[in-house]
Image (cartoon, rainbow, N blue to C red):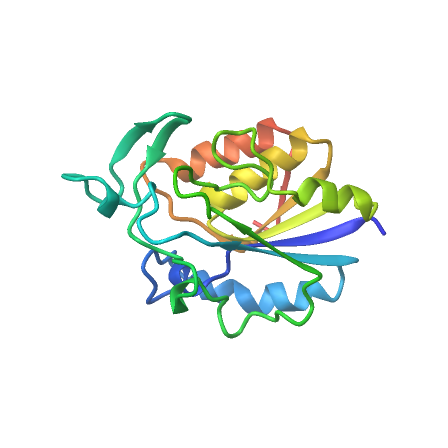
Length: 200
């Protein structure tokens, strides 16, 4: 076993009609489902915030969604409340094939710190446990798809490459927020880390 498909945050709140909707976020689901059959393992990640999470603009007086603040671990975008534990918004999109998933990794559940990456929280040191799972299963190659390309996919791909995995991001099976140049910056970060971007 060498190849895993990592499906990043295909959840209701990131799809059209959701609290933090990524344009055409649900348009990638049929292609993701089809790709699952080609992978040796399928891992789904799920944003899983407690109510009142520190990354929510509503948790900071006088702040609005998409404002930036400094947190102890560095700069943080403040988001609309989204993917709250147990909510419909946190659920995977109904069209996503969950039956093929070997593992679901939940992230962002620590109230004081956000977690974009499937591998580390935003302090860049606290692990999610995904690396150990992949190593013990003998997986060396990762294909990443999902939402959003310029945040959670980007951070996950860069971390995976730094950890020594061979990483391919399927751009046709991702969608981006593209906020203030975030998409271009993400593409540069991924290519700079040795991530292969295909399907564009």
